[in-house]
Length: 238
Image (cartoon, rainbow, N blue to C red; front, side):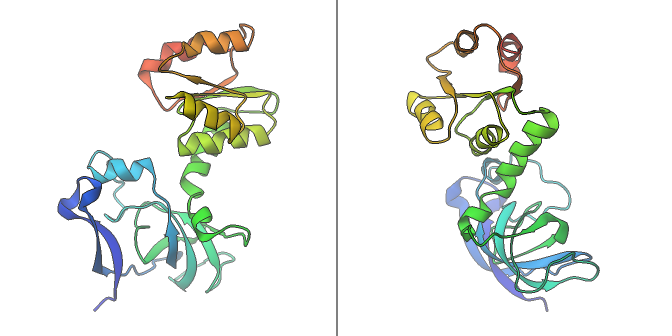
């Protein structure tokens, strides 16, 4: 008989946050080929989790029904095969298809990194999903390079907060953002370091960006909004 563990489950399989509850009879995962069993110390909560919880986010076929894609913890055991440079007891953080809202998670060793001692468990668990997404959007898709200007929509989202800092650190000439209130705009400038931020509810952000850049526009645009912003994005492209 397999061992059990505690994990967060959803009453009825989907629903509001009030449907979340802890079960103590969930099967403890068994690591497969190349996988590592991690005892979870902390996990991150992402927007995709909330959408998945209400049933509007299709799961990949290999994903467990338990929520959570990012976590930190200690390595407890190994499945068969190679496991890179990891050893039992290592402190790690990583990304998964799901299953992080639990005491244990089994993931491929290639989805793990050693946790720096300078990070708390909570800090490390909050990195993988947002910071990897921001890195992919900025550098792989956006082909950002030092000296370019960037516009991040949804400026106070987790991904944008990460991306603004990445762009600044990589030598952006300027980093702009949009957000849904003056308080959010002030936060993203003062606390995160954006060059300027525009309230899309009260300001014509297209005109403001054109004005701020002397009509040039921006080199890279990272947009989580989609269709309704498409033409506006074209209007501010350098």
